[in-house]
Image 1 (cartoon, rainbow, N blue to C red):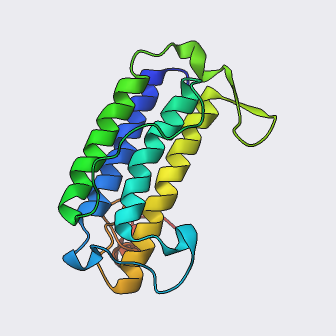
Image 2: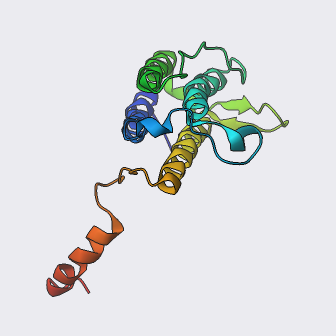
Length: 175
């Protein structure tokens, strides 16, 4: 459980950096790439997914601040691939601004859901933001893999590289 909004912002920065890493790795062919089938969110181009990541950060920030579950921020353009990183950076800065200095008590206060009579704690709402961003980053990484584009390794190693290290690990008594 989270106990400090500043701690969360430091953690979220690591999520943001991974999103930037994966977006920066995309080739020019990713611009305007769209799945070959699907409707609604299942048919979004990578441009649209990047836009959605940017706008949803403020959606969750508003909800956390108990200002309603609303998209209220004009996302910088994501129409061109060159705009993706600046848009993500701007949305990160705005998200940080909105949460910076909020009281620790907000992490435990209850926020009414948009679609039910239920509530959830502020810290859980912030974790929803994390899961949402990772979900869409994974969506982009899946599209990359399907297209044969490089997908950055989260820990800098592939499964194949780990397999090569197994023999040395066993020799050291690791099983």
